[in-house]
Length: 505
Image 1: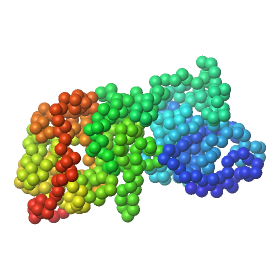
Image 2: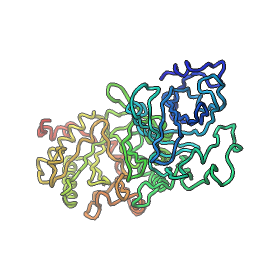
Image 3: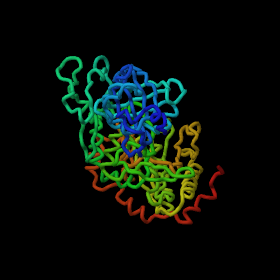
Image 4: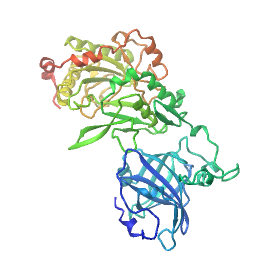
């Protein structure tokens, strides 16, 4: 991203504006909004991208009302240091007039910002002195990249307002520059005064992580807030962390809670909390930075990101190309009774036990059950995937009334799909004790095989009741998982058992 246009429009021997110096962006991305009294009053909206400030002139300034679609005219990129500039641009210089730093803070792109800019739809979250919540920039038409017309729109979330409360530029005209201090803030209770702090401005700190809007509803049907989910993770940390640490992770983010739009994110992305760690994974012909959570602070940080589901790879850092588990996801067709699902998972458990393998059971938190087979990480992904496929196809062949090993939903009527496709590089499985973005806030809960009975269904355990369950257990149902993981091998005899039966692709 070039600063040539910025340089060409200014005489830096006259103007106090900062010179065109590009910097390297860190993990936290900044945004700035400057009120600019040039020929006409407007607000300059600036987002840090790749070391420069992508900039738009917003004639009417931002509005907190989602119905207000504010014209935003893209202008030349500005250097990062311009964000903190406040002062007067001299007469006869480009943009001559007074510049006031009206707002500043952190912005988090919801997805890849470069792709969003190219596509013409950039969704993001603001965490600033005056603006917060979700916003979107939508390009109206594609033309000269330095003079494109966009729309700046507030998303409908907890920070949205209507009527006079949406007129944030009038309610909060004061500067946020450090030198301005409190003296420039308006006084009194009439029009133009700063609004009183409200519940939506409250923050909480949990395990060193600052939670904004802690009372925001993530699961409205069960009154479960961001703070509730953060406290849940603190309580179950000893149970969940062994199953997610050192693993690449895909997260399901729901900025408007379970009832809103959700999306998957696996790349780390700039602006991610520091407690969410980077793990470099092979991708295509190169590599990519994925996300990883290794401690309680990382778990709480995912809540601040509005993450409702945690899905992990089947391999760990240091041996990403050698999986340390095989997963069979038993996914029943919509017409399959639950008793049949229970019988089916017992059949698979019996087969694995018969060939000398110890397997572990958990609810999916959705519709079915997961059978997890911890193994020594010594085979590549192709070997483990091909073997798990041969097991699934064997079960479908010997128990055709129960199982199917093909993905096509049209063929699943009355049957259970044994999904072996989790056993591939890049594929993930929802983590044990992770919530699901489903009604009731269910979690994927480990079970002992003796607990398998009709009254325990795939979504029986939830964020609200799983702690009571853990407190009542005499023994961790997965207590032997780590030891099994260290010693259980898929030897040559086991790998060869069903290979001759395998169907052609």
